[in-house]
Length: 175
Image (cartoon, rainbow, N blue to C red; front, side, top):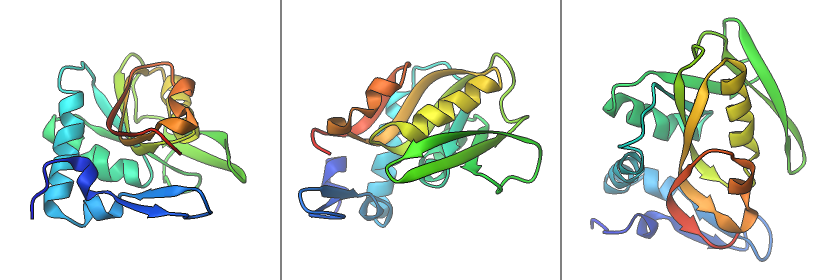
């Protein structure tokens, strides 16, 4: 049965991965054709009036949402991947995770100087992955004109790390 609100496709799992946390599972959105269509349409509608040249998405869920938006809006898609996964010359940056660090990369030729870039991912929580992605785009001379996510966990204040507009299809007050 088709649901009217995008939030109705998200399954909330209490006390996962630890007590007191409500895990917002987006796989339930992806597993439903109507949910996936609503997610892509809702996200795309948020940025329909933004002027950008390239969509950049972080592995792997940024690929899921960014690629159809790039396709629908006839824009190229730039991959942001974990270190060691891209075959040509890359740039990289490392960032802090809850328990340790991670390193992501982009091909050096994925963004041209002066291009306007829309960064897409599934979620903004603490903002670490998105902040690192923005650094890569800027290292290549690109200008991030917006960050687009399916879901924002406002209680983790990730938006505070991002210095450009953030567009969220769903906002949850907690963590």
